[in-house]
Length: 183
Image (tube, rainbow, N blue to C red; front, side, top):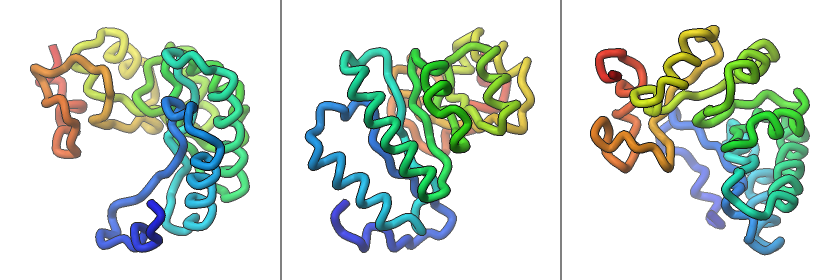
């Protein structure tokens, strides 16, 4: 990532997001600063800051919150939206964001009430292939305005191995969309 040529995009229809994932909170401040500066110094090549956020599975929540706030402030400064990782702490992420920036919740697993609130306030959620095995996700999508819902393949603990391979690839997006692939 230190090489500036990394950002010289060969394929103009591929857009970059860069952030500091909550699973990386144990990194020292030097690494955090390096990622921060890469984002700041390459803002024209980056369309959003993320994934950033909170994860209930990681024990260092105060550090997660500190870094989440820092990268939200950076996205505000740059005028960029954020990609939120909010596993188990979706509401807390939203309270921290407080509509300061537009957000897209990656692999949304929160409740319908928050999803509606996010969408009403101009934010986005993405749904993964979990929709194929999770009644919660299917019901959620049925009750929401589809304008602010994106689809994706990625989800690190999805157990849809019979539907899609373990490694997510863009060509698997159709597995998220058509009902014929879902029970």
